[in-house]
Length: 316
Image (spheres, rainbow, N blue to C red):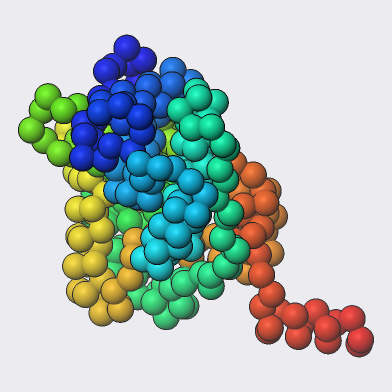
């Protein structure tokens, strides 16, 4: 991201701080500080949106603990646990910025919600077989991409950004970019959103993934590969994540599989890896997680059938 980029977003209807124009100025300075620290453009855009839609409505002309806590409690009802946690993180960071820069006298910290471990949804064995059969029987650039996602666990934005040149002659996929639609924070243009192609969400997400041999065999069957083209189209035109999601659901209908979100492919890959007893550190690296703990917390949990098997082995 160009650090000289003017990050200005007018929020004059939220006059929460001293002075008629202070909100606009302070928001701009806060986002500029993030940009100077190397925060990605897509993250800056996400901050801008969340500040406008979630954070500022929870503040008032007289910023105090009771008002903020009350407004945040109302917001919590309308957000998922993970979404609300992210809102609290940003709120606390913004409040600290206000305090450090002497815009407010007292440092206020909103308590984090109790983390709820949600059950991961995955494709069952029958659905996995149906999907694989359909994709192979209807082989094209798009279905090859879906196969790649299913058997490597890549994110939808990463799939969207892959070009054929990202697959080397040894069958290794090099993940170096992600593609997403983000809020346009440039007030001088009409478009409310723009496409952003940037590095993945963390340094750990830049990774090399060996592609299964059966997928490489299918890859070599595709005609007239354009090495400079995007994987899903074999041209210079990409398919953005929300369009991938729509096309994927259409594909599921044709394959006679119950509709589900694309991200379930990633969960299925990870869960199958754990079920087969492969090591977690390698899985964490393949998924691009920033720590093994994230992988453990998300995908390693008790399985009653496996636990029974272990118990029987111990006492026989």
